[in-house]
Length: 107
Image (cartoon, rainbow, N blue to C red; front, side, top):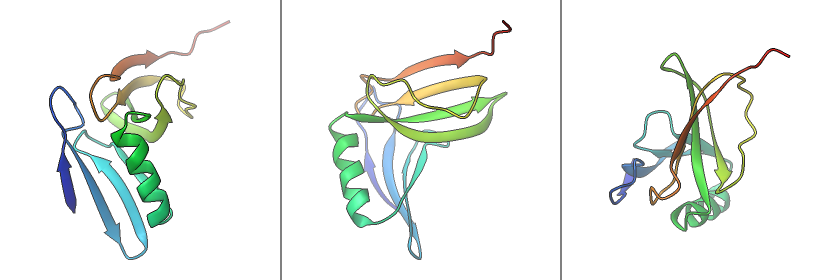
């Protein structure tokens, strides 16, 4: 896996590109921050928007166990399958990092 190290205060730690046959993943050093891409063109597009802080990784955990990961545009509410858990947004620069909890409220 090739790695590019992030600068503090980024919690991304590093960005890595991993392959297995035709499968390609982008991952950060932050636990479970991983995203599968379809091809090299998509990889390059995602790297561009990630390095320019236009998207961030979203990692959802519940009771310290991984639930889901995705990418989302900065300042956009992520569309998540999860209804409860802890959401971490991790940007390359660290400027847009956030953490919040999902909760289901009874009507």
